[in-house]
Amino acid sequence: MESATLKMELEKRLPRKRYEHVLRVTETAKELAARFGIPAHKAEQAALFHDIAKFMEPSDMRRMIEENGEDVKLLSFHHELWHAAAGRIIAKKDFGVEDQDILNAIRYHTTGRAGMSDLEKLIYIADLIEPGRDFPGIAELRNAANLHLDEAMRACIVHSVLYLINRQAGVFPDSFECYNEHVQRI
Image (tube, rainbow, N blue to C red; front, top):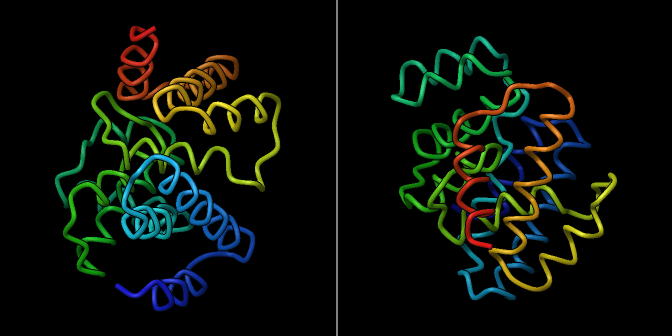
Protein backbone atom coordinates (compact mmCIF):
# COMPACT_ATOMS: atom_id res chain seq x y z
CA MET A 1 0.00 0.00 0.00
CA GLU A 2 1.24 3.45 -0.92
CA SER A 3 1.86 5.59 2.15
CA ALA A 4 0.18 8.62 0.51
CA THR A 5 -3.03 6.63 -0.01
CA LEU A 6 -2.96 5.35 3.55
CA LYS A 7 -2.37 8.86 4.91
CA MET A 8 -5.45 10.10 3.05
CA GLU A 9 -7.48 7.29 4.59
CA LEU A 10 -6.12 8.09 8.06
CA GLU A 11 -7.07 11.74 7.66
CA LYS A 12 -10.68 10.62 7.10
CA ARG A 13 -10.75 8.27 10.10
CA LEU A 14 -8.82 10.22 12.73
CA PRO A 15 -9.14 13.61 14.40
CA ARG A 16 -6.41 16.06 13.39
CA LYS A 17 -4.40 15.68 16.64
CA ARG A 18 -4.38 11.88 16.39
CA TYR A 19 -3.45 12.02 12.70
CA GLU A 20 -0.51 14.28 13.56
CA HIS A 21 0.50 11.83 16.31
CA VAL A 22 0.50 9.00 13.74
CA LEU A 23 2.75 11.05 11.44
CA ARG A 24 5.18 11.73 14.32
CA VAL A 25 5.21 8.04 15.29
CA THR A 26 5.92 7.20 11.65
CA GLU A 27 8.89 9.58 11.47
CA THR A 28 10.21 8.29 14.81
CA ALA A 29 9.81 4.70 13.62
CA LYS A 30 11.74 5.41 10.42
CA GLU A 31 14.56 7.03 12.42
CA LEU A 32 14.72 4.05 14.78
CA ALA A 33 14.60 1.64 11.84
CA ALA A 34 17.64 3.31 10.29
CA ARG A 35 19.46 3.24 13.65
CA PHE A 36 18.74 -0.43 14.34
CA GLY A 37 18.84 -1.96 10.85
CA ILE A 38 15.12 -2.67 10.51
CA PRO A 39 13.48 -2.29 7.07
CA ALA A 40 12.15 1.27 6.90
CA HIS A 41 9.18 0.36 4.69
CA LYS A 42 7.94 -2.12 7.30
CA ALA A 43 8.41 0.41 10.11
CA GLU A 44 6.56 3.06 8.11
CA GLN A 45 3.63 0.81 7.26
CA ALA A 46 3.20 -0.52 10.81
CA ALA A 47 3.45 2.99 12.26
CA LEU A 48 0.89 4.40 9.86
CA PHE A 49 -1.59 1.63 10.69
CA HIS A 50 -0.99 1.52 14.45
CA ASP A 51 -3.89 3.83 15.44
CA ILE A 52 -6.21 3.38 12.45
CA ALA A 53 -8.95 1.98 14.73
CA LYS A 54 -8.34 4.33 17.68
CA PHE A 55 -11.59 6.24 17.27
CA MET A 56 -13.90 3.39 16.36
CA GLU A 57 -16.88 2.72 18.57
CA PRO A 58 -16.01 0.21 21.30
CA SER A 59 -18.97 -1.96 20.27
CA ASP A 60 -17.58 -2.18 16.71
CA MET A 61 -14.11 -3.06 17.99
CA ARG A 62 -15.60 -5.70 20.32
CA ARG A 63 -17.45 -7.29 17.41
CA MET A 64 -14.31 -7.31 15.25
CA ILE A 65 -12.25 -8.93 18.01
CA GLU A 66 -14.87 -11.59 18.67
CA GLU A 67 -15.43 -12.39 15.00
CA ASN A 68 -11.79 -12.51 13.91
CA GLY A 69 -10.11 -14.83 16.36
CA GLU A 70 -8.38 -12.21 18.48
CA ASP A 71 -7.66 -12.89 22.14
CA VAL A 72 -11.03 -12.25 23.84
CA LYS A 73 -9.24 -11.75 27.20
CA LEU A 74 -8.59 -8.29 25.80
CA LEU A 75 -12.30 -7.50 26.14
CA SER A 76 -12.13 -7.75 29.94
CA PHE A 77 -9.63 -4.86 29.98
CA HIS A 78 -10.15 -1.18 29.18
CA HIS A 79 -11.33 -0.58 25.62
CA GLU A 80 -8.30 1.69 25.04
CA LEU A 81 -6.38 -1.54 24.36
CA TRP A 82 -8.85 -2.84 21.78
CA HIS A 83 -7.85 -0.54 18.93
CA ALA A 84 -4.58 -2.43 18.42
CA ALA A 85 -6.34 -5.73 17.69
CA ALA A 86 -8.96 -3.96 15.57
CA GLY A 87 -6.18 -2.14 13.70
CA ARG A 88 -4.50 -5.41 12.81
CA ILE A 89 -7.81 -6.73 11.46
CA ILE A 90 -8.39 -3.59 9.39
CA ALA A 91 -4.84 -3.64 7.99
CA LYS A 92 -5.25 -7.26 6.94
CA LYS A 93 -8.85 -7.37 5.73
CA ASP A 94 -9.41 -3.87 4.36
CA PHE A 95 -5.91 -3.04 3.08
CA GLY A 96 -4.46 -6.45 2.24
CA VAL A 97 -1.47 -6.35 4.58
CA GLU A 98 -0.10 -9.88 4.75
CA ASP A 99 3.27 -9.39 6.44
CA GLN A 100 2.84 -11.05 9.85
CA ASP A 101 5.59 -8.93 11.41
CA ILE A 102 3.79 -5.71 10.42
CA LEU A 103 0.46 -7.10 11.62
CA ASN A 104 1.99 -8.10 14.96
CA ALA A 105 3.62 -4.69 15.35
CA ILE A 106 0.19 -3.10 14.97
CA ARG A 107 -1.44 -5.62 17.33
CA TYR A 108 1.10 -5.37 20.18
CA HIS A 109 1.87 -1.65 20.13
CA THR A 110 -0.32 -1.10 23.22
CA THR A 111 0.49 -4.12 25.38
CA GLY A 112 3.79 -5.51 24.21
CA ARG A 113 4.30 -9.25 24.66
CA ALA A 114 7.07 -11.72 25.36
CA GLY A 115 9.08 -12.67 22.30
CA MET A 116 8.53 -9.44 20.36
CA SER A 117 10.28 -9.03 17.03
CA ASP A 118 12.53 -6.02 16.54
CA LEU A 119 9.79 -4.34 14.45
CA GLU A 120 7.22 -4.91 17.20
CA LYS A 121 9.58 -3.34 19.77
CA LEU A 122 10.30 -0.44 17.45
CA ILE A 123 6.61 0.47 17.01
CA TYR A 124 5.93 0.13 20.75
CA ILE A 125 8.85 2.45 21.50
CA ALA A 126 8.12 4.95 18.70
CA ASP A 127 4.52 5.30 19.90
CA LEU A 128 5.70 6.11 23.41
CA ILE A 129 8.60 8.48 22.61
CA GLU A 130 7.40 10.42 19.55
CA PRO A 131 8.22 14.15 19.83
CA GLY A 132 4.68 15.17 20.80
CA ARG A 133 4.79 13.14 24.01
CA ASP A 134 5.60 15.00 27.21
CA PHE A 135 5.52 13.27 30.58
CA PRO A 136 7.90 12.68 33.48
CA GLY A 137 10.64 10.30 32.38
CA ILE A 138 10.30 10.88 28.62
CA ALA A 139 13.89 12.13 28.29
CA GLU A 140 15.24 8.91 29.80
CA LEU A 141 13.13 6.82 27.43
CA ARG A 142 14.35 8.81 24.43
CA ASN A 143 17.95 8.47 25.59
CA ALA A 144 17.54 4.70 25.90
CA ALA A 145 16.18 4.61 22.33
CA ASN A 146 19.39 6.26 21.14
CA LEU A 147 21.49 3.42 22.54
CA HIS A 148 19.99 -0.03 22.10
CA LEU A 149 16.63 -1.42 21.00
CA ASP A 150 16.27 -3.92 23.85
CA GLU A 151 17.33 -1.38 26.47
CA ALA A 152 14.76 1.05 25.09
CA MET A 153 12.08 -1.65 25.14
CA ARG A 154 12.95 -2.54 28.73
CA ALA A 155 12.74 1.10 29.79
CA CYS A 156 9.44 1.62 27.94
CA ILE A 157 7.67 -1.49 29.26
CA VAL A 158 8.85 -0.77 32.82
CA HIS A 159 7.52 2.79 32.48
CA SER A 160 4.18 1.58 31.08
CA VAL A 161 3.59 -1.11 33.69
CA LEU A 162 4.52 1.22 36.55
CA TYR A 163 2.22 3.90 35.13
CA LEU A 164 -0.71 1.47 35.12
CA ILE A 165 0.09 0.15 38.59
CA ASN A 166 0.35 3.67 40.00
CA ARG A 167 -3.09 4.43 38.54
CA GLN A 168 -4.39 1.14 39.94
CA ALA A 169 -5.41 0.13 36.43
CA GLY A 170 -5.50 -3.42 35.14
CA VAL A 171 -2.37 -4.65 33.38
CA PHE A 172 -2.97 -7.01 30.47
CA PRO A 173 -1.11 -10.35 30.91
CA ASP A 174 0.96 -9.82 27.72
CA SER A 175 2.37 -6.65 29.29
CA PHE A 176 3.46 -8.50 32.42
CA GLU A 177 5.07 -11.22 30.30
CA CYS A 178 6.88 -8.57 28.25
CA TYR A 179 7.98 -6.80 31.43
CA ASN A 180 9.25 -10.03 32.99
CA GLU A 181 11.15 -11.00 29.86
CA HIS A 182 12.94 -7.66 29.69
CA VAL A 183 13.77 -7.16 33.36
CA GLN A 184 15.02 -10.74 33.70
CA ARG A 185 17.59 -10.08 30.96
CA ILE A 186 19.45 -7.64 33.22
